[in-house]
Length: 81
Image (spheres, one colour):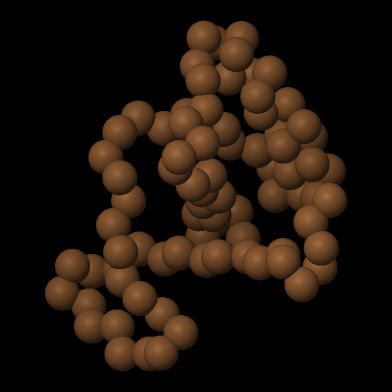
């Protein structure tokens, strides 16, 4: 279990290439190139919990392995929020 003081939630937004970030708590970065498995789920606590509990099994069923050197990214389209 993760101690509460060690929990965090990182948020990333897509910005234009020429967008200037001028804030102490924000920085601009790039995602690594590569292939990503994408799972579209309902935006509910139950669906998110179910997706996390099935993630590794679903990847294995399709002969994929998770690259744990890269972050897991949650993406929310405007229509889903």
